Image (cartoon, rainbow, N blue to C red; front, side):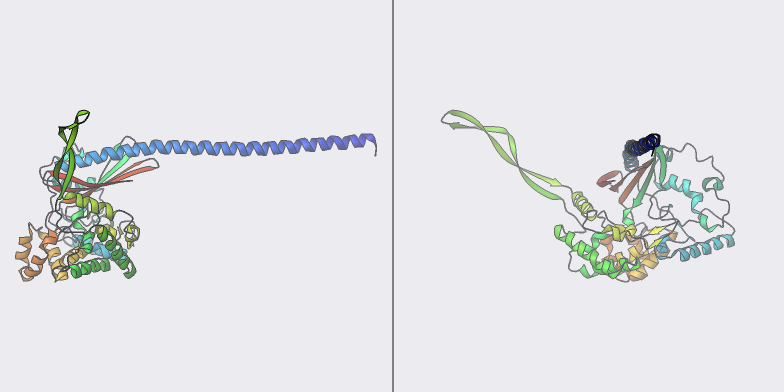
Length: 446
């Protein structure tokens, strides 16, 4: 082999080495560039999320203050009459097919009666229902609506084009909006955050504390009431037994009662007055202690149970598992459970299974619940005495249940959700309200 040929081979080898080194360098640079770009993108995403979350958190906090201020100024929620309308009481157990068939029958009845009227279509009266929901409240100040009187065409309100379209028919609840809402949910913007406020009637739900009542005389009825509620909601036997064990564990921490009494506390405090004692070195001042007696309001018990019921002691995930789920609704046992230590059920606003659980304490639960559902559609009950007069044949059973029922709700939850970009902030506030007096029970933030 000539020297020239050898030289050519060497040159080609050097070029190959340079090419390999170049390729390796390009690969390294590509990896470094990709990693750096990924980290920069991740950092930007984190920074953007923090900005979005701060906006959502600010919107949520502002909406909470607004909702509580409005709720404090509101009087008692106003119930509506719903004659000739489907009742909300039995929707929870109907499958989607049964639910659609139920609405289709009602839509056909509307057509037979000559079209939609004020009570046929939920969307028609939404604005007026919200306006009149709270007696003595200024609708324009609360909801920021400038002029609702200028709306004459109800089709403009809900975009209704076909009055007989099943998808447009809505079953109204005891206050007008769907159960368990006290008022139509409100949505508005605070900065970049979209905020939604919902107010729910907690007295319309089954008080989970009933299953913990320690009274020997009502223990069997309390257990039967829980069983009735769970069977209606298709809760499995194993899950019912597990729930009972969880509630028993909470009961060992703190027993649940229908009537909570204020807590009287005795404390020893240093007195501002001081006495002098003589010692060998002279006089010195010694602080005196004094006994202070104070009374803590009964609402502190409700707060304690609200915390216990929302702690990890109860498996709420299994209770929140949907029994029926579709585009239009989502049913679960947790949706109908009062988890904020409410103690009474409003017979004007509770669905059938909650009514039956309440009247299990007196007997004839299914018959009384059926009569209540029929009667309250025409006119809500003013008081329990009116119920006794109307259902005089069940008077004894009703008397036994008087401490478990009411006709006016005083326990509500305010749910606030704020969404900004990809971030979401939420808060749930439980409040008790009697007239103008409102007391905040507990707050959960997320």
